[in-house]
Length: 68
Image (tube, rainbow, N blue to C red; front, side, top):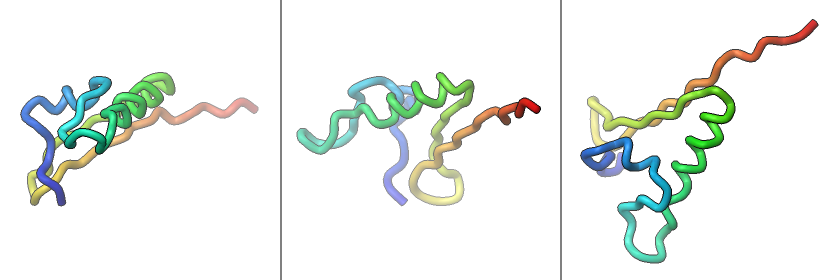
C-alpha cells in the first residue's frame, strides 16, 4: 500500500538504487534477490498495481525435474 515504483521500474534492481533517505538502507535487497533468482533460472519482476496503491512483485521459478 506504499507509493509504488518509480518511473523506470527496472532501475529498482540496480545495486545501490534506493528511494529512501540516508541511513535507511543500502539499496541492495532487490539487486541481490534478483541475482539469486537468476542463478536458479527464475525471474523476478515488479510493477505498480493497477487496482490500488503500491507495487506487486512476481517471482517465477522453473519446476525442478526429479531424478528417479
